[in-house]
Structures are given as C-alpha cells and as structure tokens.
Length: 126
Image: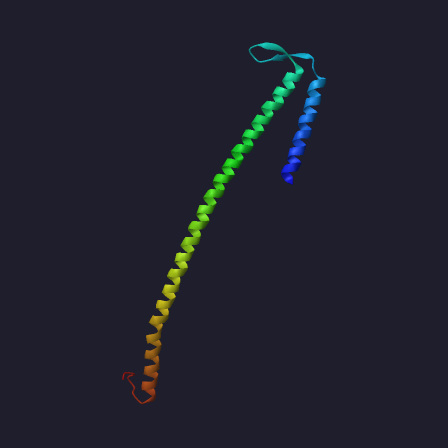
C-alpha cells in the first residue's frame, strides 16, 4: 500500500511539473560559467527535474544495495552465533555430565566414611 501511495504522489508531482513547464515556454539565458546559452524554460525545468530524479534514484539504489549487503552479513553472523551456541551448549552438557559423574564417587566416599565412624572405626577407612 505504501508503494502505491508513493507511485501516485510521483505521478502527481510529474503532472504538476509538466503543467508548470508548459506554462513557462519563454527563452531564458543560462550562465554555464564558461558560456551563456539561450534555451526554452520548459527544457530547463524538465532537464533539472530529470537530473534530480536520477540523483535521488541513484541514492535509493545505493542505499538498497548497502542494506541488502548489511542484511546478508547479519544473517551470516546470526547463523555463526547459533552454531557456536549449539556447540557450546553441547559442550556444557558434556561438562555437566562429567561433573555429575565425578561428584558421585565423592559422595559415596563420604557416605562410607560416615558409616565407618558409626561402626566405631575412628580413622574413617574400611
């Protein structure tokens, strides 16, 4: 919908520029720094409008290209971060499993030493 309104606004602007140019058909003197020329005002108005449109269009194309390139780089970065996060979470789960396995013998030793002390063994060994 936004694009349709922009197209309609562009057409209205072109129509108004065309009407303005047709009304002003007198010849005018244009100073080009190194020479002066007599040209009809209609050509000057349409030429300046065309040059302005080319400049604005070129900037829009450049901006679109830059945004697409930035979007592509950010998508690559996101996929890199997702893959590194997935590998880190897998590594952390392995570390957690290792730490659980390592803590089990300690708890078993503590239980054995407590049971040994209850039986009257002061050294805590079996």
